[in-house]
Length: 329
Length: 216
Image 1 (cartoon, one colour):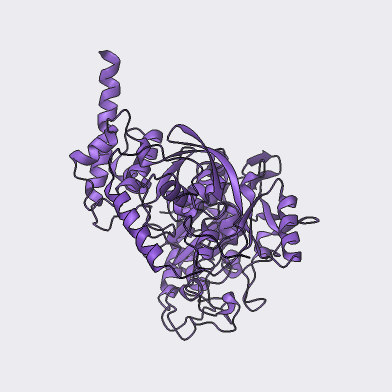
Image 2 (cartoon, rainbow over the protein chains, first blue to last red):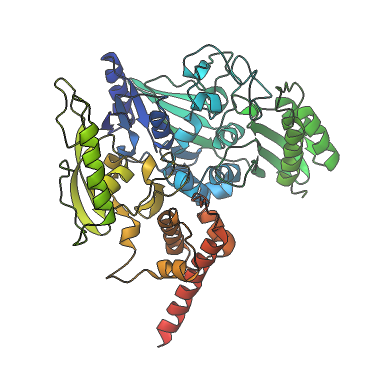
């Protein structure tokens, strides 16, 4: 592997400043939470840092803190810890299930929530060093190439899908991402954290080069809230969603008072379905309504040459997950 | 390996196959070396080459305290295999996909190919060499032997470490629980059913030992 220096950060601001200072001297700096994704990118020479800023040495950054406002998950909390946390399992099952569905035990033991939502795409062109938008180039090779796992929504000019399982769950839960930079913090709703390629095809989120994710904050659940994460994969383990759905519904008896439906694996960002959410609001959840919601879910989908199968798959995932959350299966 | 801050601790008295191959390989490398191209620990770095960032760390390896100076860019696997000569940890894919390099770090399994040695400062690492005690195989290793769990054997040490971590958390797992816990360890011989059988048997045997041990 390429030579680089490791710097152990003492606080999120210290980490941000070290990255900024390195850049000011012409060095390339990268942050390492768990570091599992970063080291693969370094080995593949997709990223070539002179300095790796290690976030694991920041005190308390992996804690899950409960308060009257909800739960604050430190950016360094591991996916394994999140999937086992009693409060998260009870109040935010969609997030616990999403975290538990990531990759393998070894990755979940090291991989963090911050790293999971900020991970780079797993498009095979990007990961194999093709000079695409994500690698500093100006084309997307999947458009005319091998695109069976690529976007059916929100694509263009890049057609990657966002690889995170926890990201759709966080958007569906109305999470806030707390971001630390060299001179302070800012809070961004999860629904505004991710960036479509038409806004900026080189990146996937609003993080600046010298910003780190300090925490992911979840609001207290409203009474009657139920949620599930459902993930379809092309093998049983160690892979990303082909299609997934994070569904959060506030139920009153048979009736859904409010719904949040967010898809994974189908778009360059977690793909929210406001039209479906409106259809479900203040309605009793029936087989018929779930089927109509599934049809509405794929309105506007634009498949590429090899991924039209994702349309019926998306319908199935939406119908099934909505019924599951409503307790109808 | 003149860069080793420590002498290797566990050495056979005779020249091992690995040492013979290593020595023969080094001789070939030296013979083929282009002037000015550094071979680590054997030839000097060309003038003007920046030195590699290094860091002193302390960690526990298989129960023994170690103080080491590591290159910042060394992976944990690299440190264990190339500098502590704990070559039971294998490198398969080197990119966190196959699980051959699995070790236990502070009680949790990690891919040692995808974790920097410098990040292990202050932590405790257990490798496959740490399973046997006083020359006796761990009951889990014994179960692997009895149930023919290894075929080519390359993935075995990683499978053992994932299984060891599972049994520590869940002493008598079901087959489904074993499959879930070992999902990050590939076996190219595809001997998954025997591996799961061995882990379940080791758990069941442990449960029997604990029960009967209390009454006898």
